[in-house]
Length: 195
Image 1 (spheres, one colour):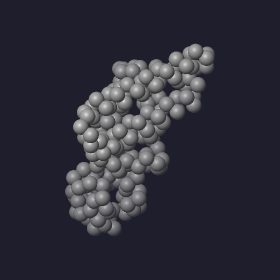
Image 2 (cartoon, one colour):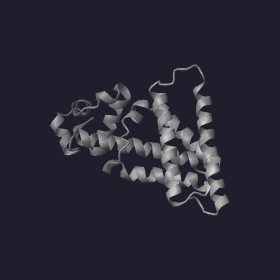
Image 3 (cartoon, rainbow, N blue to C red):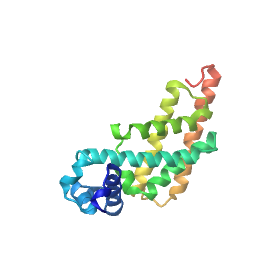
Image 4 (tube, rainbow, N blue to C red):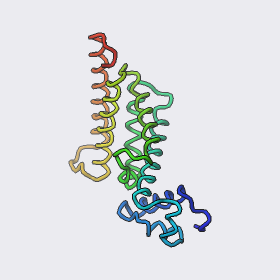
């Protein structure tokens, strides 16, 4: 890559190629500079250091995941939207295990926008369950925890028993959907929307 084409976006692209090809531990400023054909100090014109680069990489991965989630729920509602969101999330993590592993879960300035968009997509997918306010946020947290947890365990090869993983995931999705239906029914029974 010619030096003139370097930009923060290009540096992140190079970093993601390194992560995809060599794994997350291979991501260093030196490795990115080598791919770019520049000396390591030249990268400081585009990123302040490895911590910022990792944040930018995480932001890109979260933006990709958000796009997958948004496409998955488009034109769907209720149980179908929720299952599609979960399936899209799992599929992204399975297709890009190294990228998914560099996704920083703690809030960062570089991930704020994509994180807010992902929460918005999740809230939209949950809208059919009648959850509002705090109840909707609790549901988003639960949905994120189960979907992320399964994706990480699967990507790391943690499920070693012979039972089919797709069946396990279908059961997980069923449990999530059933739990949300129960929450909606409980709210309707006591007259409090989405509490």
